[in-house]
Length: 164
Image 1 (cartoon, rainbow, N blue to C red):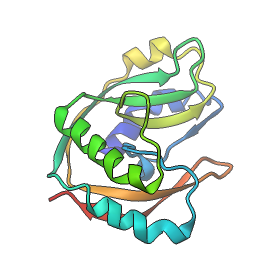
Image 2: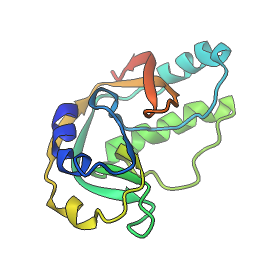
Image 3: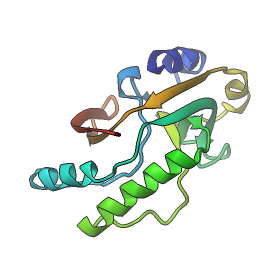
Image 4: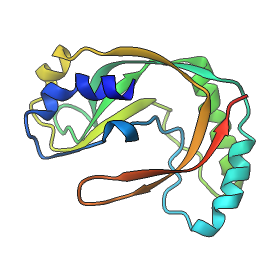
């Protein structure tokens, strides 16, 4: 699925825009962004992730867009169809991390897969011509570390928890 999404966005990448693209192996859906966290807290975060519970979730990815809008496009994303099971999973993640001092997100959950960050002006027509659709079964949630580098963020899975 990741490679298919990467390939689908190829025509936009070929425009050589000043964009830092997320490599296919790093494409992911964020349920909660924790920010800068001390490594010493990792064991506690692992325990919290183990309390999320719930079973596997089906995720349907289709369509493309930008944040915040086409007047000031800074982030290109692939859409994730709204699904009650996915929203419940995200809510449970919020609940287990709130007691650890991670504020509950005030904005509504807008699931998406970030594809690139940068100056994406003039892409509105190009995005409507892209085609991609895939449905995947998500069986794990990961605690990930993001490290900003000049070529874009590098992601490392610190802990994987099975949704059983």
